[in-house]
Length: 198
Image 1 (cartoon, rainbow, N blue to C red):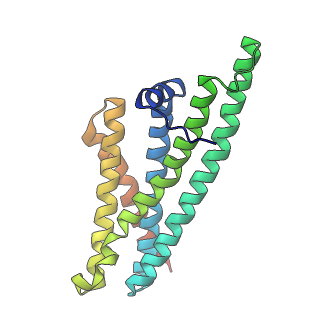
Image 2 (cartoon, rainbow, N blue to C red):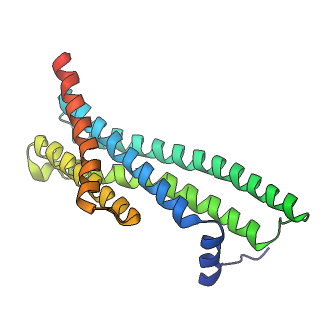
Image 3 (spheres, one colour):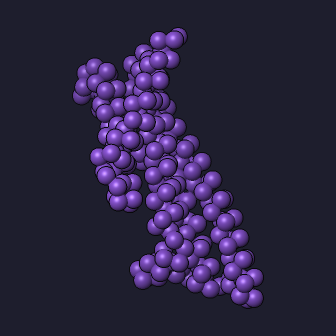
């Protein structure tokens, strides 16, 4: 069996046929957002709990990121595969012919893989980025600086995600960035409030 590689023109055509860009952007934004907020929760929980072992935080955080990644990939793969198969069946019914070996079918299969990868990787990458300061805790001396740096990165990523969405929607980038930033600030505030209540 020979391995067949897709040409750039084929990949571009598949993207258009299966609307990969639009769906991929949605998955990227939603799951990156989830990854960042989950790490804010983990970092704040560790901070409030007085955890001063950076290895514990990084391993716990990375394990959480990987779990989100597997969940995202698996869930997206199963969902997209089911939806794409249903779309193909409806198209076959309308055209009264088997489309299993057509360009449409290949585009749908390609979309399932790409969208699943985006869904799985976006929370892993965004979440792991928030954890970067804990890899360099020895350089800071005091782990509190790792906590502060980690939260600053998380908030900056949220603002950047808001800018990304604003560019897609052609909205005000500052307003959109601030809306995303507020979600992170609320998460931090709620964590601190839980500590006060406790």
